[in-house]
Length: 269
Image (cartoon, rainbow, N blue to C red; front, side, top):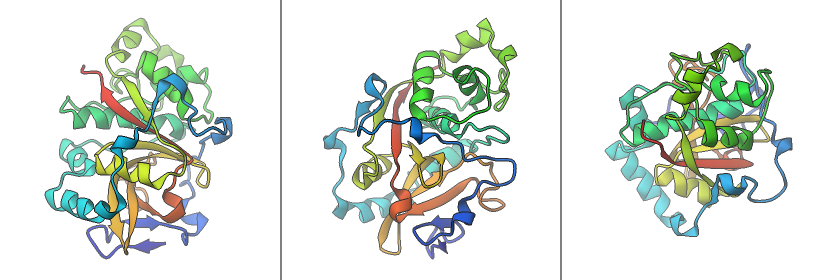
């Protein structure tokens, strides 16, 4: 574990030296990603997501300067999201990290596209997917549902209400307005693709075997002479410490996801 001496000095840095206990779920939360459901191929999402195109790659020698420019101009995803007032997700007592991350990216993508900010309910997708059971899953299950059916704002379906009573005809119609129908899949554990997306302000839903958890990657960072990624978790605004807003930083092998998908564009509602 370490803390940066730059603008991220108050944020937790999770790297190869971080003790496992630091990243354990707080009491009442879970690490419920099931990447054992994922197949062995580089691309497992089929028609749900297009492979990352090589023309989007940004050379490594440009990373540090680009990151510095984004930080100085305050054009990072986190800057836009903070200005809009979009909070991180709070999965509370659910085993739904795997659906919180992609649902949050729909919220983020809407903000990046200058659409009205809306808070969406992960349970409105995770509940129907899992037959209203509070169990783990993985990204493809979420995308199959989100692409076709979307998700419901929390004022109509509470965020963590795994309850079929909310699955009304009115809510199903409303959910169609809150979808991302185009997604992009990254190859597992590919640093160049991860950093290129973040440098292009494309957020990523990333799943980690080492963590058994799925989170959202927002920003590229450069700390202690190496690249990293700034994540936002679904364990509430006070993780990993009070006033943290759900942010921390991944570096080293801890940054390399075993599963990664990005939203391309949200339907304008």
